[in-house]
Length: 392
Ligand code: CXF
Ligand code: ZN
Image (tube, rainbow, N blue to C red; front, top):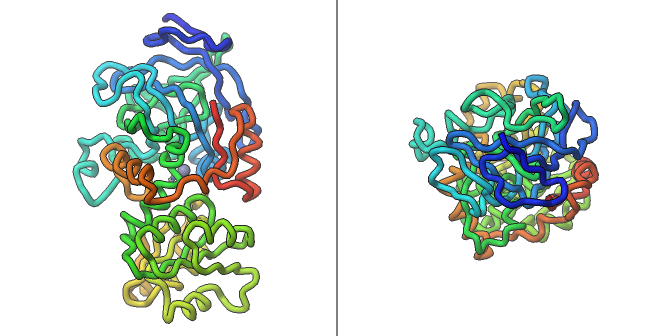
């Protein structure tokens, strides 16, 4: 097969050829990513090869990179699932996108034909839904990345996307075309964090005007929940975080009240009960901590309050609830990708973002060149960034 190397920036016609380009490869849990040349195979049947323009880091990348969940370990691997790019070429049978289209990668794909895709009440996809344990393409169980040296070692995929690379190959169910007029850099946010948070408020909870909300964990996802709740007209949006800095950015993004558990003279749920006269209508757990999840549950109004779980838990654990507690009428639900069906619903959300329904700029706290990806990981770990955009 013909090979084209992009080492010196040469491009030309690359369709049907192996591309040698730059990627950030994880060689082991917690080891700094290595920027190196990798081989990227052409897209196969119903696959798409995308030139990634911008990518950013989400906590899911962080926890997978650390190897926090054993069943998800596969190295070498290319992480990354929040990005935006341009279609370079498409494989046999792909009709919905073409070379040159601006696309958002979807870690939670939408095949469009399975029972879940046909059901309007879920954004699960039986074929290409999110699966952190999967590390190869579904067509043949192989990788499209290999090392550029003579060993040609397979490099594993991550979350259907693997965006920490100049080029990546995705199943066509895992890309959605966006308006070429959309501000491409900001559209990166829609690939995970912003859609996950705003969608959790809009689609999963269906926050109504005048309702009350508590958000535990004010990272990008938690703050996107706040933006979603603000846009819906929630009357009280309580942010809870141990980092006092979050009250400042929180106030710019819809938070009306801030609680730092470390400064609180009483359990946080009691404080929330007090300021909302009995509990919030909706609480969102964006940390991935069982104790926090219980507090979020206890913060909702007895009889109908709903807790939406967004934080990821690193190893299999049980919910911190006695089953009888659910007879109180309180509910707990989880939300993936904000309940959005990626291919059918994201273009409309992108349009709403362009119209200014939710704020985007505030979420981009840093920008760095791709080569500085390890610094961007550090910023996120230190709680200093919401999103650091990496230009590839
Ligand atoms: C997560 C949601 C839970 C499974 C892994 C991906 N979402 C985005 O980061
Ligand atoms: Zn994510």
